[in-house]
Length: 178
Image 1 (tube, helix red, strand yellow):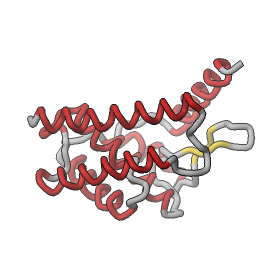
Image 2 (cartoon, one colour):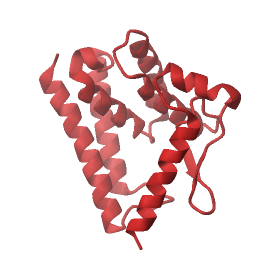
Image 3 (cartoon, helix red, strand yellow):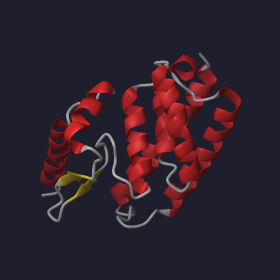
Image 4 (cartoon, one colour):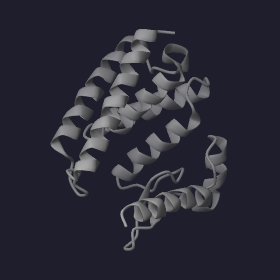
């Protein structure tokens, strides 16, 4: 395992989440646009991840451990201004899942994000929007009748269970702001 690389990836993830929370807490996080500070951080992190992939391939568990692999996934998941890079990483994650070098949920979330950003139905039902009352509803799903089978193959809970988890988070958030 490459501990220095793992530490670097985890530091990128930590800074991403710190800035996100700071912008959220300050009320600076706009709902309809990409905050310039967040965009700059995402682009910087994506650029560095591209270098890492060029040198090592996808940074999976065997290279950077579970937390480092999760951090690499988060970086690409947030690389929304580079759709081509995200799409390339779907293929890399498919290969890594096949050799059991990343958790399957990482592939599900990235593939669904790429598909929804492209205007296509998602495949695993990981991406949600909110209805007019703020309750979670999944973006359209391809072959929705079999989505729970696909989710289970990658270690995810059912779509209904996930929707209830998100609804519970909404309820807690609403209770905290009262």
